Image (cartoon, rainbow, N blue to C red; front, side, top):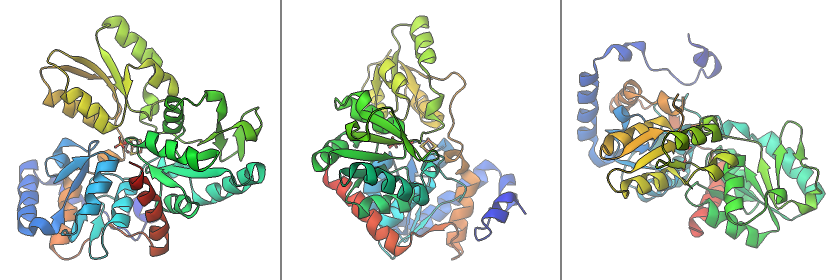
Amino acid sequence: MSIFNEVMPQYPMMPAAYRDIPTEEMERRVWEIKQKHGDALLIPGHHYQRDEVVQFADMTGDSLELARLSAQNTKARHIVFCGVHFMAETCDILTQPHQKVILPDMRAGCSMADMANMTQTEVAWRLLTEQVGDSILPLTYVNSTAEIKAFVGRHGGATVTSSNARQVISWALKQRKRILFLPDQHLGRNTAFQLGIPLDEMAVWDPYAQRLLTDRDAEDIRIILWKGHCSVHEKFTTAQIEETKRLDPEVRVIVHPECTHDVVIAADDAGSTKYIIDRINEAPPGSKWSVGTEMNLVRRLAAQHPEQQIVSLNPDLCPCLTMNRIDLPHLLWSLECIDRGEPTGIIQVPQAIAEDAKSALERMFEHV
Ligand code: 13P
Ligand code: SF4
């Protein structure tokens, strides 16, 4: 028995024999099941997924697009979500009760989403409201658990994605004097800074120390940033940007706003995965890019645009290990379980949590 089964015994693991199936046979079996199930089966795929999985996706997108498109689909009975756990939860919250959302490997979590739990958030909220009263609106990046989204929804706040963080933070600052931004300090800081808020009006909340990491009075702080980060995007550095520019000043550096503030400021451009894709798609032949985001996307863009020079900003590359857990054997296994009438890896958010989380998601959709 694996460690995973010891920890989460309710989730069966893919039988090891799937690893021995030749690739062409796996691909043939996936295509057959897709054909057989037609519209009753939907496979959304995040831009960070492996090519071996993306080739079967009915739609690809960033977090925002996948959330929107899932909400629009009412036909699929089974939605096999190729992405990470929080995305599948969001999909379950936004889709209809007759639709089952399935994650092909339950180990596909997100280390950033795991950096804020409910106990820590309740404590933070109590301690912060004791200091500044009813002046905080909570916002959470969609890269968070359904419980955190529900907490935010219950307190009148909204979710954000990297595509719409600007609009949602602008809206939030018209509602209350300050915001609590969970769980990615970098997206929160980078976006608030873009909106003209000085860094000294932002402070990090440390959930372990249970305090604001600032010498300033809490009353002076407008943006409270949860001490969370993406372990993939933190691997990009200003030294890499300097070296890239030293070797070839013509290269444009474009990064995701989950990178640190220094990196975003030093880069030529920054934006969500969709933003990065759009900039490269519209660039003329001969353009040179150094891209600071997950490596599956960078590799795919390089393959799609041989007329441009596209490399990763980090020469050692940056894979998201949890995104990469969804591979062809897991996709096939998951589809064959559905085909046998025994779906496994079902993501079902408890109704009370789903209702509050949905209100946070709907508030986001109202403001983008
Ligand atoms: P977007 O898809 O919103 O750009 O986010 C990237 C990401 O880290 C997803 O986990
Ligand atoms: Fe989470 Fe970062 Fe992976 Fe996105 S890239 S799923 S934020 S760990």
